[in-house]
Length: 429
Length: 80
Image (cartoon, one colour):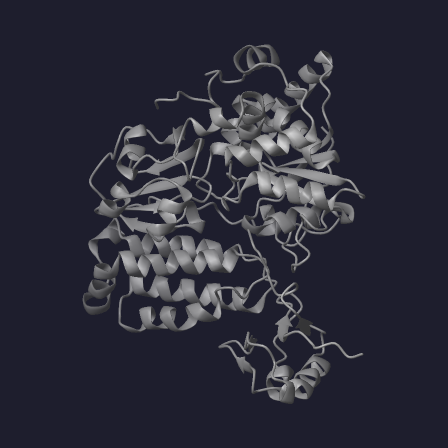
């Protein structure tokens, strides 16, 4: 990377406060207007999946909060099963995230922040505790913060779910509006930002908008953390400059470990791209959207040529169906029906299943309170498009050889226990 | 003085809706059935001459999931 690593610049497995300050400089003593101005001009967009302009969100929440005060939620939940970047940042560079929380809170006028992580991550909690102890000893002017554990469920880390949880409810999506930036925790305008976004913000406020834009492209400036997995030589979390090609992105992880047929871009909220199309795509939110996929939370999973893309997608579809909050009819009925049809196509073949998927999909997209059903439908339909030849083969001759291979894509074992029970809140750290 | 009404559209709260489908019976002109008996709403403005049907559909919903919203402020579900 020509600009060199930024978020990961210390290279440390854990950057303590002294290392952090030596590498990045001290926490800036900047005021709200200045922070918002820099972030707006930098062009930083959210790194949690939606790629919304961070500066605009800061300004909106700050404006809404003029009388009531605001709340900040740092989302470190990493709901995507294949993602590892948020945990990696929390473990390696917690001070960058905590700086970002303090600066973000200052920008929107929040007197309290919540850092949300999925439950059962004791190492992350210990690391945060250690970092907070170091900051207290150094007397940093941090915003008051609560670390909150969130149930291990796909939809639990959706922003309205987090607000619901922090307001004493279960971690399930709410009907919107109001959106959190209008009325969120305790009825106050709430800024919900991914932890990487806040870390990017912490560096941008230090070094300025031009510095931020000196990496990446004009429409997708800066660096981003990506999780590269599947059939690559060295799977893991990497920091890359936005705008590189798909081929160069795979090369960051040592390149494909065997011939590829496709890459799942954007995680389980993204879409499949045939290997040749992926290789030529620009790795930016807009570039991937143009190709029919998404940047999402920066997850890229490479599928070997000898795997069955339909069977892989069917497994994820089953998982996503199980992960429905079961609140909205079209999601709780539609996702299992779609997953069932795709499973039938992958494992039994026939002409009927793909017709079922095409017929049902429009009744699912856009009809939930959250975007969970939309994401699942997009993924399933991208499999029908990108693996169109396989769809025909399965329809005419039944299942393919690829079914003999062990699955490539990670799917967690469902934890139905936490389905409707909500989380322990708030766990003081 | 009566102000010129802005566009009125139907809106369902997908979490509240339990698929009782009474609204579909009450207002078939703009509410149709999905494969699981849940209502699919026509997103276009409700024509004036159908407004009473729309209001009736809102009334028959046993879980108060259906509403008529005015203007586009409520309608925009900017989901990020």
